[in-house]
Every structure is written in structure tokens, then in C-alpha cells.
Length: 433
Image (cartoon, rainbow, N blue to C red):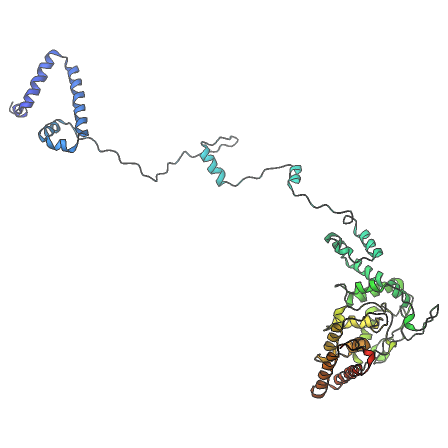
């Protein structure tokens, strides 16, 4: 009892005990206890909601109510972390079974991450989606053989430039050889193997050799000689191919002057039947022409008639400077009968003639005797400006007097000076003021 009296010594506690005893007499204990529990819980909720000032003002009541509290309330749970990634269930693939994706967002993410797969299309849809190719014209669709015939019979060198397709079909070496042979066929057929010193009887009789009509188209030959793929190797191949087909049983004789005899050269200057070899005969004539330092251009005997006399020399072969291939091609054309002094040939501009004179003789490191023999005729000294001629004479005089040239080179320099000085004196040279 000592402990019981100590527990209920407070007046308020005694009052509560008395009230419980009285109520328990008239009300069932279970109902009373449940109502009392609800009241107690409500009071504790109100005590937690109340402000701190209220709790501090009534210290006695709070201490008494905390005495009857059974246990402190648990702390609130901590908030979930912000960057927590919730992993979904791992999808399992079952062979032969297709399942729809769980969400449209996940479907969009998968489509963005995976590359698109190829879709099998029909051949008609593929061909329809391609850009339409440019259809070939009726001329471009012709085979190369027919285009070659059109090119030869029309003699229109602009046909290969009409389109890339036609140009590609007409770029075969065999086609180019046939075009060159077609351009020179009539001239070669008329004059093959006949040197210039051979007397030729023409019917009807002509006044001089320049009036003998030469077969062939000079304009076509000039245009073909200007083409970039025409070099000395191509010319000799075309000439040999033509001779094997049309002149196998014809006589051929050299006409260029030789410095050595037949025993030294190993080649017969008189020629003969089946003697012609385009490359071998040309090489012998060229080597002999290089050895001849003295001007021999005034000798008409060294020419043949492989080219129409009115055919036009390419400008690059006139002006220079000349490499070995250009020297050989220049010699083949001048040996073949191109005559720069022909009365019916229009003269080139004086700037072209002046450039030829300077690159061949006046300003050359070593005067080129072969170029002087092939080109420097009377045509180069006429219709020049008088001051230009005077300037060239002064340059030649200084070089002859103070230059360290060889005797052969000085001989060419004096020869050029003599012709220029003669032009200054003669009114027929028509020097320009």
C-alpha cells in the first residue's frame, strides 16, 4: 500500500481514480476503456499540433500528460534520394514470340538509339526512286564504227567535241590513225617515193613546179596537224600503216642531202622497191640534217611531197623553243613539202616571225642550224617594223663581236645579220614604219 499511496498522492490523480471507479459501476468496462483510449489519442494529437508558446506556458499540464504517455512517437521517415533510378524488370526474349513495348516513351527511346533496319523493296520501286538518267541522243547511241565513218566522210573535226560520249567513242588509237591517213591519203598516193629533184611530167603541162596541182585538202591537213595527240611517233606510225596497205610494191628514194655515204649510214640513199621503213628512213635523214651546219634550205632537192605545200605549220613549231620531238616533227613537215615562201600562202603576223628569229638565232644559247635551215626563209624578213630590224641588227653585231660562240654558231649569226641588213636596204621587204 505504500507504493499505491505514493502513486495517487496528487489530487488530480485521486479525482481520476474516483471517476473511473464510479463509471465502471454503471458502464461496461470495455466500452469505457475504448472511449477513454480514443479520448487519449485525440488529446495527444492536439498536443503535437499546438504551438510551442502554448506548450511552454502550461508546463504543469504538459508534464502530467507526458507522464501518462506510453512511448514517444517514431521519427518521420527520411525523404527518398533525388537521383535514384528505379530499374524496371529485365525483358526476356522468347524465340518466336513478339511482345509490345511497355510504354510509348520507352518505345521512342529505343527507336532513337537503334539504327533503322533496311527495308526490302521491289526492283520496280528501286528503279522508280532513282533519278532519271539523261537519255542518249540518236547520234550518241550509234556504235563507234558508224561514228568513225561519219567522222571520216564528213571530215568534221568538231564531231568528237559534240559530247563526251561521242568523244570517248572516237578516241581509240586505231580511229585516230585512220583519220590521219584519211587526211593525207591523196597527197601520199600522188607523191609517194618521188623526190623533189626527180623530173615530173604533168599533163597538162604546167609552167613551173609550184603550179603542179597537189592532191589533198590543205585545210584538213592543217587542222589535223594542230591536234594535240599528233606527234612524230604517231605520224611515222600512220605513214608506215598507209605504206603497208597502199604502197607495198612502189619505189621509194631518199631526197634529203646526206653528209655521209651509204656505207657509213648503213642505208641506201637510192632506195628501191619495198625499201620504205618510215622510222628508219626518217631517222637517217634527220641525223644527216643535224650534221649539216650550212644553210641548205635554198636547195629544193631535199624535199619530198608528203604534205600539201599550202598546209599550215602549227604556231608552236614556228615560234619555239623546240625540244627534240618538236625538232623532229618540224623536220618531217618541212622535208615533206611545206613551203613557207609559197606565193599563195598568207604570212603569219610579224610578232610570230620575230619570236622565231629570237628563239632560233638572236637570243638562243646556241644558234640552231636545223631550225634556220627549215624555217628562216625570205618570208621571215619581210613586213617587219623597221625599228625591230634595227634592234636585232645591233644585238647580232654585239654577239658576233663580243660573244663566245663557236665558229659554226658565228657563221649562222653572220648569215642572219646579212639577211636582216639586206632587208633594210631593199624596198621589196616592205618594212613597216
